[in-house]
Length: 192
Figure 1 (cartoon, one colour):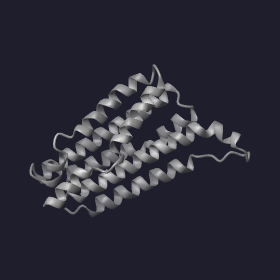
Figure 2: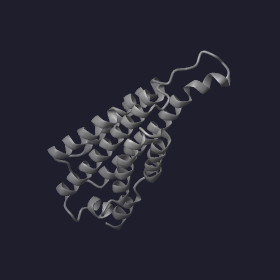
Figure 3: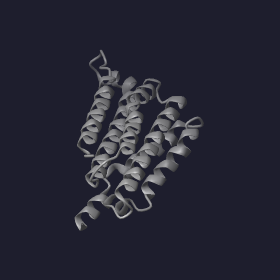
Figure 4: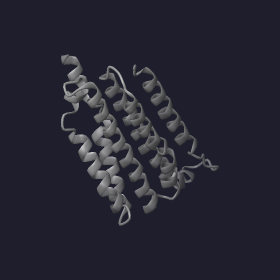
């Protein structure tokens, strides 16, 4: 079956997630810079999550650009990914509103870990559907970026209970790793 509806639905869910996150930002009632200080954790949580959702949207777009068709299992795997990404506004708000407390920071990492696992599963199902010589299979190879990301999440979640800043640094590191769209797919598609 075609991939158009999957792309359109995914774009819509991610746009709604970003919209919900921005609606969580409450405007201070005072008109001075000091009024912004208490909402700084909320704003920084929003910025990190906006970047994450943008990264998923961008890489999801690149991945689907390399796909000819989708199957039922791919549709379900995509819904699984969207489920975890739909929780990003909740964990973002909880983390920000509680000024980066350990449990919300750990749960944020848990949601990000499960989203990353879901993205990996989606990639693997697409490769199985399209074949080992498909553009996506050739582009991802051993997927070092994906494995490093998963490892950083797995380490960061328990670390959040000891000190939140190293955990947050790990979440930022994952965002930095993925900030530039996956050029591997573009390179493979140019060759074919």
